Image (cartoon, rainbow, N blue to C red; front, side, top):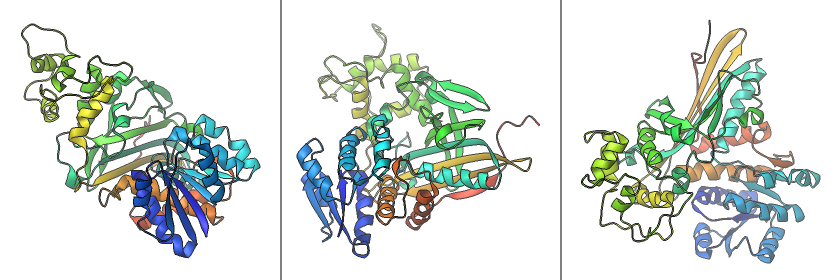
Length: 452
């Protein structure tokens, strides 16, 4: 049997493993699922005869090399910074490799060796990055094939709570890594190009510069800018485009409310707060407010944020129980961002009956035969339950499909790459439709700047 080594049995691997197990008899597959937690790996086998679990520590060099050497192809679902050790062994033992993570500089440095050994190292083949690349390149290439000239490309994606599970004032719950949400937009200004002019938004202003979107059947959304949209000028072959912008989707009102935390400094991860383990939630909030001999924490908070007591922003803060003097942070040597994450996790964790939702939205503006036109492409995916979430489906299924295409010789181009070639995105996008991941493309009036 053809052996697929899957390293990492976290939440994102459930749909990936389920897909490959369903295909395992007809495709002659044996899955070896490795995780630091043997129990987690065993749970993911679903007691299927074509799956086995192993305890796998990526830092255990001898065990890692042994497992990779026995495999026909390797899927790494580890945190991004751990892929490189796996990748080097895949070079040594001439194994193809698939990951959902962004291509790091270290991974890119293996491109020449991968090509010399005729190996495929497919990266960025999850949701975002992944499905965003594939769905964008499909339409961009179709426009170019007709002789169209790209003028505008905007791309938005968000992991949200499904409407039936939307039960708090923030219209948001954590569907992925909470830490990434708390630290969103940090590490440099957001960069994009708009009507031929480079634009920059520093973190302090990021959540007050939003764009509004409408998705039929799901209402209005907003989006704030991702950190660096400019790198996609080369990736998507859009060097002459006038507008290129990528953003993160939230429900309307979230960004304005989140900006309160940014302005107070609660999302800062650069320093440790003293006595954080015994600090109460109320003391945490008060740490960012000026001293006053008589004003309460609530009054000081409203004054510094300039919000009225009957403002919906205030209701959002109250809902989080931020002013509770009896709840302890309970984290030693914690940063403000870590404490905020802990507080939010109590309110924003998906409950067992909750479902998540993925929303993706692309805008393609182009000129064809002297006329400016636009295509809007939208996709909404709702999770089944807490195991087979929309996030697990949209991350894991493309990984599994690419793995099978590589094994079967349908993807042939060697090297360290992302899924922007037709041999990759055409069959995967088509198969994803069978699993409810469907893009609806509609022609709309061109909305870019038109001096005429």
